[in-house]
Image (cartoon, rainbow, N blue to C red; front, side, top):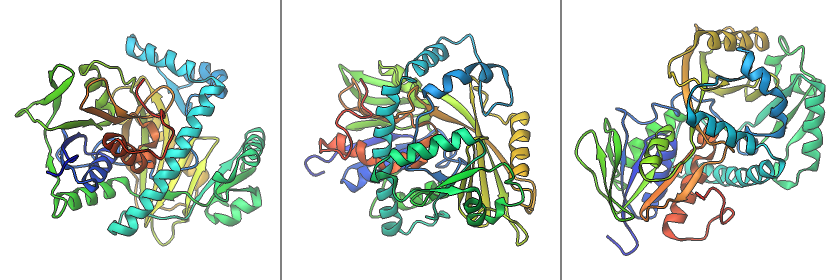
Length: 421
């Protein structure tokens, strides 16, 4: 092995773990990926919202959410539902979330995530061109539609105050929105205006995971994958990790990366630090389209209902809801019924081939919505986790940042951004 090249063991074969393996391998490291599932991408990456929202990265924690907290606790049909539990970890996360609602915190985290999002856009597009990945990837932009005059006016003012990083975003009238997306004409009665973001992308995250696994497994990459392997903890020698404890044989390497989403919380605690990662449950529907379907040709975000629509070839992915405090990974029928009714209201002429495929998943979120990317208190243990609802969007930039920090290279983002403090 060349000087500076190491054997790195990546925990997690979702989109963040696979991207991490990809960039570490490009740096010349020998890489092993470990995952508890039988195949790549079977948890949060499986059927997420499919939008790559590089410029729309505002954190969930924001001063504007504070007046909405009572409704989140009471209204079971609210886009965000907060279920209080007798769980100290939830209370600690909730208090940290409230603290992160300060304007200065929101400004800093939005700036950092925008920087990471724009880096991710450039890296992912370069990867698609270089590797020829086929995952229903499209660069047709995203349309934000507003049904509240005050929210629309605020969004317009904020856009006008931003700098050149907005990438050609433009304000649209109601008429402009309906002309851009004729599929909205039948159900878009309440739309008052919109914002078009031309530099946003969409794609099928699971398809990309499958293709990356196939590519990385083969020569010349020769990344080793160990599926059906649950990582239970670490073996230490002083402040160094010397091996992984699994439900099978112990595994060892020169360096280790925690990149298994929600599972990073347990492993972080086992290593002596608290990543503050909590599950945010969300839902998606995937519709097969027909020649008669009137579906959006590009991504659409219904800001009022907080539902996103992404076109994936002859399919339409719809995703929404945030349930905090629900740790059951199964589908909640009431939430799915609500999501279906929202689709029917906005797209009454969708005319799909059949009932949609239903999915529920847990997004691994931190209180201020920023992931942890970099070193941990253990000298050869690293982390790339806690991306919340933006794992797919930020995966490429996060993996490149992790590889840069592991190599000791200058990084493309702020020096202390996303670091564990």
